[in-house]
Length: 386
Image 1: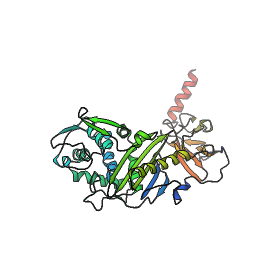
Image 2: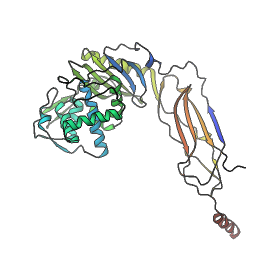
Image 3: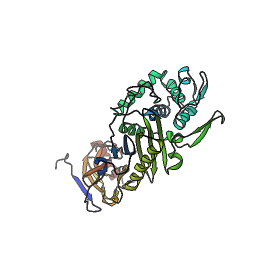
Image 4: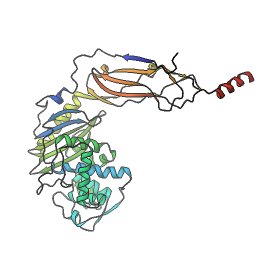
């Protein structure tokens, strides 16, 4: 018997016959299935990055204050990594204090915590607060903008270029992005749970109640499950929004760029979100551990091991097709010692028709040493001692 030969057991669990596969078909259709009054739009699943709906998604547009999603991302990343803290006190620079547009009227030399500046940026879209945070993190406005563009490149946002951190565009020419790129950075920001502590605030205040904040995203108050995220309005950009919401475990991002008025952007975002929640659901399938057999260990100190069963992710699928998910289990009948902890013994693959939803590794839970002559001799001695 070849000690290095491996056998594989394949178990296919078919819950139902798969027919009429059309998952995410609307992502490829034009026009979109709902009315979108905007230059461009994207509906994305936040968990998987799946595009559920798109309309001129790669058209370069001015983003206005939707720009601030990227500064918010860099700030939350810095907080989560421990580089800065919410309790840190920031001294406002002359540059930050000079910013116009939406602002909390910071004065040069004024001090405010990262927490309050983050709140002012996320809730009220304050340009001065956003700039102050950038100064604090990067040392200067220019250095912060450089970081924004570098992070955009890392995320694959190939059609995006930032000229500032605020979205003010009176003097900009190439401060551009796309609906798809906005969805990408929105998804990345939502990976940081901290941000929704701010983006879900409807009303709050700063300076012991002297400065009132009202969220520029009206969906926070009027749309069930809203988690954020950011609005933007200028004469060049029109009215824009990256609107995120979660219902029954499904987290969606609707990006609307270049609407003629505020009502159109919110109604378009709501229509996209409503369509997404009506047509898709998030499921977390269970692996049938009883179908994963013990694996024999050849020449090991033990004769077999019980594989570690992986934990699958959640998947977004069309509603009504939950029972059509199949799982295929491939696992070795035996392995040769030594066996390393975490060594791959097989896989579990989930499919919906021809689409692979996810593949997960079945692994060894512990290290298993080979059976040596010394160990075998001691076992024999122990047997006789009994």
